[in-house]
Image (tube, rainbow, N blue to C red; front, side):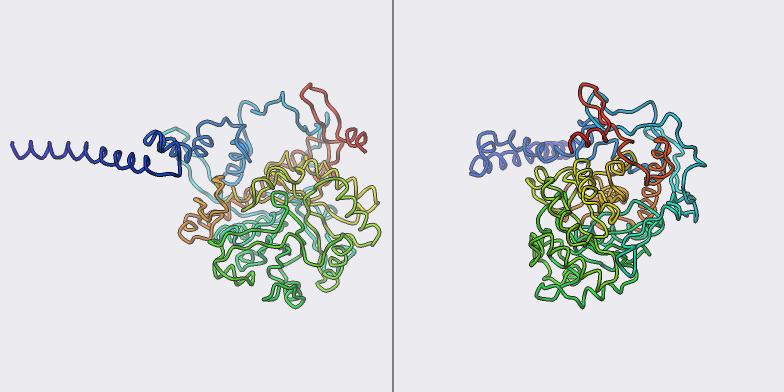
Length: 524
């Protein structure tokens, strides 16, 4: 009895004294430290404050934000991608959660929409995939199972085929899809994510994968997917050891069958300067592909050396087309009308028009950028698109190029709006990241991505199962194409390629409705 009593007393003392000791240790440490004034004045409460501040983003994302408040994507958009990728499902119940009192764009529905049999859709070959079905939706007993699935691909018909570089190069890029993956480098994303996306996009078919400025890696080529190789001012993949442009390296890339086109990156929406990769993400493998030193931070030049004017740039585009024999486009972030007109006017005067122009909205994403650039530089996609479209029409060269739009276009309705505002094709980056497991932790630049997507850390990448996630990427893309075709039918047209400004209206905060065509005519 005495021994038992002694043990109980010791246990109580331990349970009491250890926490007291820890608190006192923290108290006296924080009182003496000189970095944080709050901790000096309120040691214990201050520590609680900093802990709460640290977990604040997670608390807001999962508990306190309503379904329409999250940024850069709200809960409804986040769930849409997940359900499309996992279940090939776009259904909701009860009604929309959109705040209809706020100003915004609306797709015009036709009183006599197109019938399914009237749509110009190619539904062969079918896509073999894996889908999940929910068996039990109870709160504490949720069950689901994965099974084989067969999807209609929702391709464009042959008469609607997009042929980039048809009249300019020896090897034009033909594609019967209008949605592809935007630029995401190996290094910004890990090899597991790149591989899963490559295989998934290949399964979906009639699409493309942009390598990002880090050049082509073996992981981009794991699936038999069309590749657009991006060339940035850093010249990764087409450079000498000294960082100069190498025509020999470019020719080697041009001879790669999987590479269908090249994109010169002038800027991206969230980062209008040279690319940036933190040292901890630059592994020896990535350094070898980019021809740089491993474990050193990469800062690309802000622009291409020697290309100081639109004319210089267009001359380079023409040289690349002549040597490589494949389409060459440019990627821009729109600042204002004058910048765009200077560029487009040079196209008209020289007769050199890029095969495509990627218009990346200032609301687009980046694996690593700076606050001031992401928030305050570059027009958002819906403002930039009509500006570029109109300028090309003004100089009578709209039919000589394609516009690829990107910037928060992760749902079919946003894609339909972008097409109506002047886009021909759509690029998606973060939507595909979400499809393979991204949870929007927003730590892409730190190499600590918890889902193993935006990290090169082998331990974190273990969580991303390639054979599982490739189906998610495939399903998401097919679901998106299907949704856009549905939007086209509701608008009374038979193909997404026929969207125009007459299919879009804008409602302001006073419920005044204006057609986009009328708005742009007044502006111009």
